[in-house]
Length: 339
Image (cartoon, rainbow, N blue to C red; front, side, top):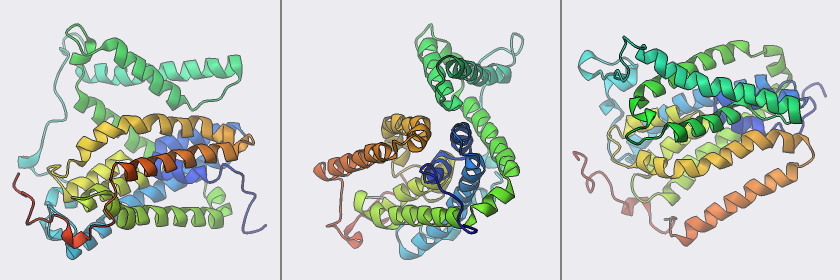
């Protein structure tokens, strides 16, 4: 019709790729969708990712201000307590930290060039390998999935032992390079969005984005207190930021309300994060083909089963606290705010 164009079974995955995956995932999954005949996927995915990041940043700050007024925050009791560095994004001279150290002598090779190469090598090999797979077997995977696997193999090969190369890698430099690439990706991704495509899908895309916001807000305010005993808001606002943008958005919101990681949110994330990676990769890699290839119910069934298993495990391990009112939870007066 005039207001609702033809919607295929892969349209719903646009929400997850944009909100949870971010611009990088949206570009990768969008290109896969395009190869399968869903021409508007990349533009819709980039739009979804842009809306997600905006909702993550501005919505997160609004929710933080609401939480401080209601007394839900454990380590920051008033919005005015948030440091000026966090509020403005400009770090004062006395608070600045180095983004990395020289692990390679500049006489032999510039340290920055060395770290850039560590990112370009798996990216290039992933692209070449994926092209070979597509030309030889006709299989179409997102390039970033193959590059990720190549990077894991490189990590295993380089090793962390005494003879391993990894001891000459500065993780801070790698993280900054990755963040820089993401910033450029966001800029060019937003600039490449075709407005006529977005306007054509305005109604269904708007409803999809609205449903996504409802889900993440319910996860923050309803599920968050149920699944966290202490520091429930700090942990939940991190998940909110992660689920509407990328890890960096969740980390930023967490640092606003818990600058010293007293809630141990990052510690727990480091433990369970790798368990979530295969679930994500399967969705981004196999999802488009299954959804557009007549296996949409199988795809839905797989993730419905995963969700049910996670809920059952949480209940069995007593990770649900619906019987304990918020006023009976530990608050700032019961926690050591000074370490």
